[in-house]
Length: 436
Image 1 (cartoon, rainbow, N blue to C red):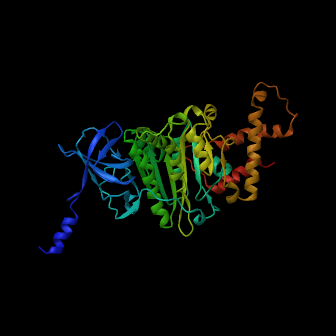
Image 2 (cartoon, rainbow, N blue to C red; image 1 turned 60 degrees about the vertical axis):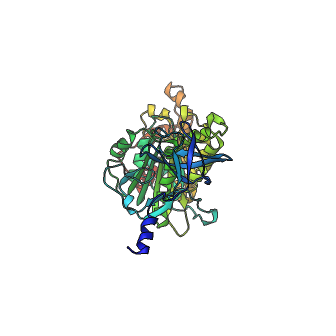
Image 3 (tube, one colour; image 1 turned 45 degrees about the vertical axis):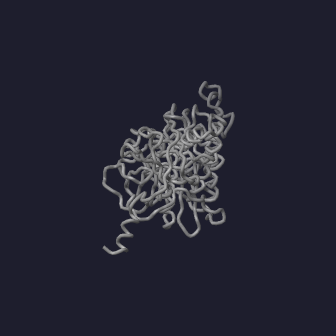
């Protein structure tokens, strides 16, 4: 055997003559080690000396005596004295066209029993957002096939929007409608911290089992906090891979709240001080690091992102909801009140807004949308008077007009989960409703 062949074989041997550290302390979410000189963010391999159990972890804290490791899996099976090796894997994942149509974990390992995924390109998990001066202007409409969004909260290609709702109001259903009907050649969906049973339900019920041109990245609630945290960043890296190839990508994440809760677990385990609702400062600073990676880049493609935010107790002043609204380019609020009237998707158009709508719509469209919202607002303000018969027809001509249009407006707001409406159809329907 030649010397070159021997060198090539030795180069492939993991942990050969590696320097290693040892575990000095373990708790439920964190492992403390000594004997290594790592940097924050380094990936390490934790190996039991009594069994074949191994686990990857990340250096999340440093002190004079050693370092803190947050494992991607669970600490059960490890003990003080087990070894920790510096890994050459780095914070990168394999990406490529082979991911399309697949359900994967954050490390791009298949979860759908369809065999291995052959991807040769590597993409960093953590990456700086698009520089401000390299961002393209959002001046193209992005149709999602949902009438109340396309007509009254029009999105732009490269926009970041939040879907805010309490539990059981219909976030997943609306997500499925957007994914099925959106005008995007590539779709990346991140299901972070949700119940395991919701994954096949979302695929079969909300998407109809169709995963063409779609990548689903899953980190369920039973995964470790680190896996849930970096699951979101890994999904964004997949979207960026296709964006860099000039594609227009739809990115959907459910949910930002579970993502922030994962960072809350990590931060509190490392001794960070809790602030509002127990969230440490790192949970709030992490949101823009993820959300700002979406957008439109000059000379490349775009990532149009929808982030769902679980609003506990329908409280829109929740710290995660409040921070998300300040970062995003618009917010879609789902109302439990509208579900009581049988309006699905229950989008509260008066409390929702799209910050780029004026840049991607015609003057006539904006006027019609504004008139629709005004009529809807008048009906809302006078709802009690109308229902108890205290309002006399003829007192207010504009309110009379709104009452006559109420049934048509309600029909415009309603849409079956299986129904997709073309953008031009939506605009024509809106114009017809508000016309005299």
